[in-house]
Image 1 (cartoon, rainbow over the protein chains, first blue to last red):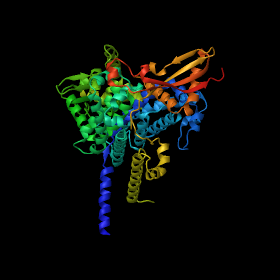
Image 2 (image 1 turned 45 degrees about the horizontal axis):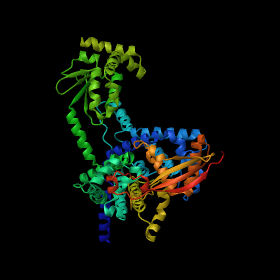
Image 3 (image 1 turned 120 degrees about the horizontal axis):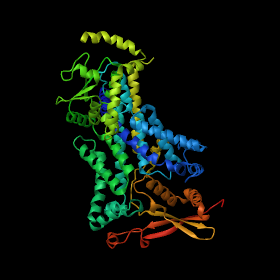
Image 4 (image 1 turned 30 degrees about the vertical axis):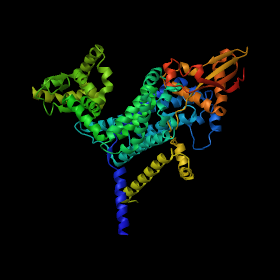
Length: 447
Length: 175
């Protein structure tokens, strides 16, 4: 009895260690961003073919699909559409949801719409889908049950902003959970199972045993490449090596990917394999989605180390702002919410004057102080920060259009800085005059 | 009311049950249906696998690569003239439509009893300006192509390596 209990306890511990290790969602978030972007691009490019692919007068009428569907579990929202506007509306909503999924906006429910959409497109026209659609549904399902959107997302930005609005120095802790670890593990098992079955399937074929498989692939119409065929015909041993190497990688992957020492090599080999598929066979979409699936094997500490290295390379940045200006505090809260790596330090010159920049200077504009002692004012401060903080890269096009960015940016910034009291009152609903009156005694004191 | 401790335990059990279920589904779904045991194992998972589109074999280019076929068709107009088309030749390798069209053409070749009639109807509409009376769908099946052929300047699509057979002839209705 006691022995049985001991065994159960050991099994329970092993189960918990395998599945429920508290982990951040970063590997899943990378997969989310990649898969969301790939889906958006893919289905946006399908828009001109919407009715040909999935419409009633297209390649496969609904009746044909339903007549050849044996299972009642095969469902598609397109089965229930009758009017053309319904196709257009659903497609538009789906594209918006793909964009939101990629950006991590309202991820908790948007991810389910993306999954339902992907399955619906697949089942409405089974003649259309190929390898990538299979793996997409599997990855999307795991992402749906996972707590994604907690990092590298607009949802995270919103949460950090709310915390920063209360207190700008507040640091929202990184989301970690045992369930995130379990879902990352599920995605890893999915990728390992895929490689395992792909390998044993190939082992049953003569083309692979003979080492001719890669040569034959490039002679088929879909993957025909005169350049590759010329190279392989002159050096046929390359076809043998590539055929056997493909099987070796696929069969080694599910066994050696779990070990700490071998994981980097297997991951690099799998990514190399898919880059080859993309470049030589034209399987760009498939390869990209597969690489995103492999991101589940990237250890969160690798991301953390990469982030720290980036932070060190970019150097220390201190932003000096006016803590009594409501508009400035709100803007800083927004700005800092995108600084996921915590690269920017802040200083409120009202309570903690800077030894580098005088109060009079900061009265006119926000300042950025760099480790070498340089101090950049206003627009130039933002312009410096934007390419150095990954979360702000989306602003690069606004800040780096030659001539135009500075031509427009400086006057716009200066106007905002000059009118920040009025903007603060507009945003907070208070009267600007009351704020100015409240400030007058302070200013007379400083004089 | 469930205590906090029991709530935690129940959550743990529920999460564990789901993980075990989904892992079993991922492993069983692609297993070859060679034995009665595998077939029996699939039964409880089948609705789940089908509903969420998880039922995949992961048999990329397996067991053999296959020599491939090219879809072609001929539009027959009311004067009896034939207008041949090779729809895969104009496709852009870098556009996703490349694989969509190839997938569709392969589906028509592989399952003409399901897809040929609707494909024919679609092609009749698409080429309405030719006043088609019928569409003859063809499969250009590739043969063995050796490295020596490549070095001799030949191509896999040359007529000597291709066998063309009729997949189906579909009459254009409503002309």
